[in-house]
Length: 589
Image 1 (cartoon, helix red, strand yellow):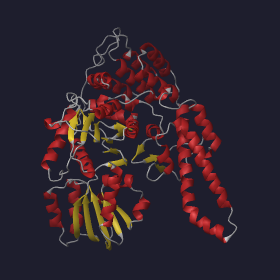
Image 2 (tube, rainbow, N blue to C red):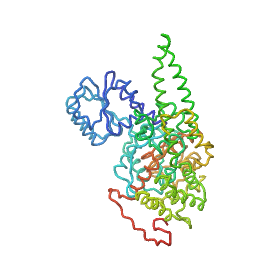
Image 3 (tube, rainbow, N blue to C red):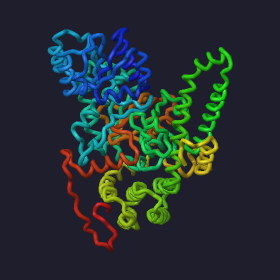
């Protein structure tokens, strides 16, 4: 089950099916992202696609009848109307139309009536209505999908369409199970099942001896994981710099080359990244050193151009040399910036405190450490707030808890009100996590452009000395998802905690699993899936969610989930009525 390969095959086929000749690729805002995470622009250009247009911005473009138009759109009402307008006054010779999901007969009729000049050669459904970040990881890029602890209707519809597209691209007709404690997961599961039954002709895939499983989880089953600092390369870049559609903005990064405002981080396009994305950051220094040594050796060989043979070799190898030069500059810049942020904001000590909060039962020790860190000017407000969030989730029922005291320390250090307010909302949000947490616990259940090889190695060795393997202090935490995957493999996934939609039988051997998390997933959980599948070769797992979170995006989602109603209006919560002496707040007890 390789969802990235499935999307690449769809894109390749839609371009090939239009035949030889110059082409334009007409897309919408979302399908541009779907294509860009699966293919580099240079790859698309090799397929005779010379022009890229966005349908809502293409209405006044020039007429180019010599071009074939390959249309790839989401099956939304807006896109159908825009495409109908395009077909009434076609700017290109012929049109090959592909929708990323199920298109209604009514929409087909609208397009047919608009095709007065008969320029449409075919209309097909190619199921790529999701962002394939990697072979086993996908996202729907939905921000704030939950309002007032209810689905935003548009986000629910988009989630149904996205998950159905994943199932169809993988050719799976699965049993659908969901977390019993979550009305959000249940509603999504039932909506997906209803559509599968309605579109039964599409889901004609035989199950065979093994039964595919679609498991829908709720982010509230594990609010800890998105709040932790990360120490593997991919996850760390996302936490500190943010990866969006495999791209990282370097605007404002000290020492970043002026021509490198944005870099691509794709395992398909970047061999170094593919080999090191799951590596502990403490080990990155040595791999960067090896990359730079290799590059320097090639650079020296290019300095000797003394014969016709040398010139020929130089011309033949120059593209590879240029590509390697870009990779070296990119990764040295990234590693240098990550190291700078870690040092400047004391993230090692913060991470140690986070791991103690999430993995150990040392309330007094953790509280003392958090108080000391909150009094330190070196740490950022967001890191200070995350420590309090984690403490509130971990110890909100502890008899000696001091959540209000920590909130007061946040105020004294001048933390923005929004981060402090979220603290209260988050505690309210976390109360519904208790049952699931009990269940999971009871189961078996410097200027980077001037960095030299020695500089990079020295930085990582100094900061991360001894940071190796999962037994180290910074990587003690294990996501709840790992326990759930263990239970799936062992056939111990509780039918009470994870019922099947429609009461369908859950009997049968499980081999292929699609896990979708309402409220978003993390790169730490993606890494856990990667490790799990390598250790359990008899099972294949694809992981997806409404969004791929870092701590900031997660906190934004949480704020929307509890502060706003489904209609988008602000909810009102009672003011703090607890006396100053009690140290208690009605939402924190």
